Amino acid sequence: MKNLKALTPQAWVAIALAFVAAATFIAGIIIPPPGEVHPSIIQGVGLMIILVAIFFAWDAVIRGLNTKIEHGKTKITVSQKPNPESE
Image 1 (spheres, rainbow, N blue to C red):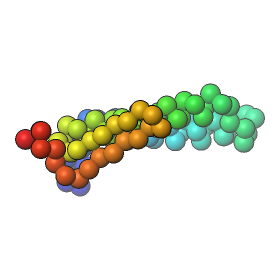
Image 2 (cartoon, rainbow, N blue to C red):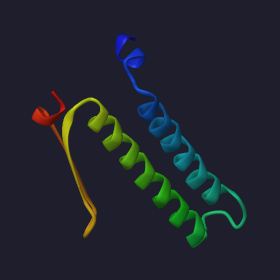
Image 3 (cartoon, rainbow, N blue to C red):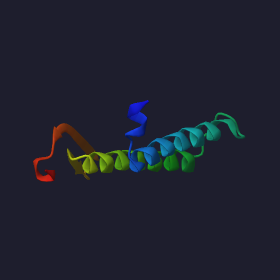
Image 4 (cartoon, rainbow, N blue to C red):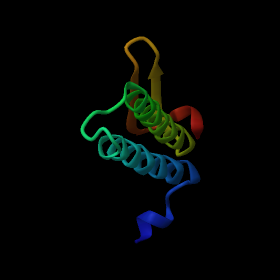
């Protein structure tokens, strides 16, 4: 339970957004016509998952971890080593 209290607002938003993305995708499967997911649902869920990744990366930056974000082929790297510039 201690770990939940240590989460930052960015982490809470990312977790909530992940649940919203999952619910949206499930609703897209259930709502008629069942089993056929509209491309806009897939695109929306993809964008929400990208936002989740960005919020977790932002949280890592705030915690002082080494974080590297690339744009081409989209790559986000977070290292467990503290960033020497943040100290």
